[in-house]
Image (cartoon, rainbow over all chains, first blue to last red):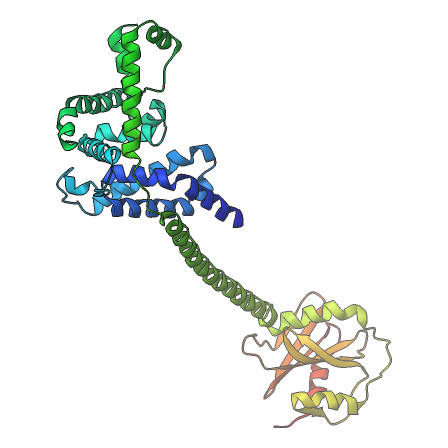
Length: 171
Length: 237
């Protein structure tokens, strides 16, 4: 019992931040993301004995979270207008230039189609390889690599075409 | 390796580069520039994606788990208690059944089995060593008494007669001991007036609250024994 508790706490400590960020990029809502993470870890606790390989913990948790997210949509459809700025959290009014840029890029990431964003989040936040992502999303590796390419390409194009507009912000 | 392919794979996964790609990049300033650009972009993407995590999320997660497992434990204890109770209940029933249920269906079968079982303890040459007074003392619990001594009484004591307390008397017979049982009436066990196996024979008489069973060798005059008992015994209310 005690060792299970210790294992669980270590798992939460190590992975809750990544999991929360992943959840956030999946649902674009702080509170929903938090609920998803809570639900995920609760399920993880109940099934902790089935986790044999600690290295696989992250992808295991992400799989649980994706299922949990899918269940949320089964229960009810959120009629959020997709990717409105309202769904993107405004960090601080007094943010510095770096924050403004982050915020701008966040919007772009949020505007990306889900199928491009998800592999990119898994790659950048999760640190997973193309193969691992393919496994988690049940896609083949070439598809994942193509989506990753398109995702980055879109962001690159956005960054390349935006500087003038952003320049205006900064006076 | 063509330029497009390299750009494509850098964009797909900037951190995964094989030898051939590294070589190609090293020899081409344009590609180097592209790699730098993408690395910078990736840095920005990572920063943008790195949204702040609520400070108390860790604590909340631990709290929820603690509550959940406490709940689970409580219901487990309840289930265990219920299981222990059912097991105890079933054991009780079983013991009850084994101790107090009749193994034999009728008086005769049991009487014969009892006599067979104890046959080795008695011999027809044993001396009489039970007085009428001590016999009647024992008879008192069956609400009966004998008026006078009849025959030679070798042994008299309480016995378990298929779960009920009974009195077992052994008399000297003509060639082998004759057994007499005083058994309280029991609805569960079938009364039979006459019974026998290869060597033994028995008679039963039914009185108000007791059966008197006589069992002996087929050669023994059991009818006489029965008559003697019948004449001698007095039942109180």
